[in-house]
Image 1 (cartoon, rainbow, N blue to C red):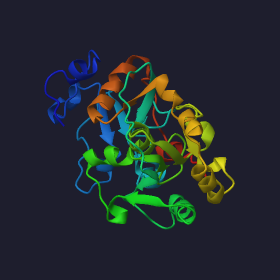
Image 2 (cartoon, rainbow, N blue to C red; image 1 turned 180 degrees about the vertical axis):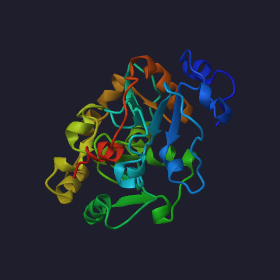
Image 3 (cartoon, one colour; image 1 turned 120 degrees about the vertical axis):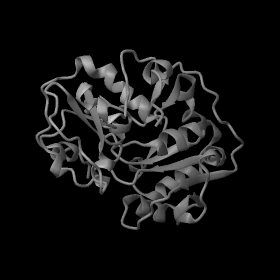
Length: 287
């Protein structure tokens, strides 16, 4: 990534923060960040030589516990965590709602009822079982690699904006694991998300209760299908009322996430160590 200049200040208005990938700066750095994907990559090299006594190490990932392997070997290594979990030391959600953020919402003429974009489709997934049953009661237009109808990233929002509803089905169910499937593919596209993920109460920590449909709101996919097919225009508009109050801010740049460490740095404990980081990351699983 491009780290030239004062990235944090110039782009994100975060002061006193210098990002570098120059390993020669290791011994002079207050914080070193380790992205989990690289930790399990063959050939990845950890820092050699003594670790400065006051240097803090951060473990970073945006993947869920179901998609995070090899964590047990990193006990007693990291001081802080940077993840989508609200109880992380540096909390970096996929996006958030911002009051009074003025946005131009996509209100394209709707021509379809329900859409879904999926690349990683396995029949054992909870979302696959849900989709199979729902699609037996109503037509779901499926896009993405799994359906052999891939969409370019710049085409996705335009395509999804033509649908009333979007299946924001997470690949695994974990606390706070609410990804771009809801924020970008549904909200920014102007579709109402039908979510499968953590419980409704978990979603309501981050978004208004009347802005989405949770699969658990109905006793079965058949009941949900009937609700969608008999939706009145007035009822549909109620799902969009939040847009009069909020806008959506996406977090898509890792540089911004790293700059956020500096914002939190003064208030974070300097003597903290994750003695069992695997247990911590898996402790909030929602079955």
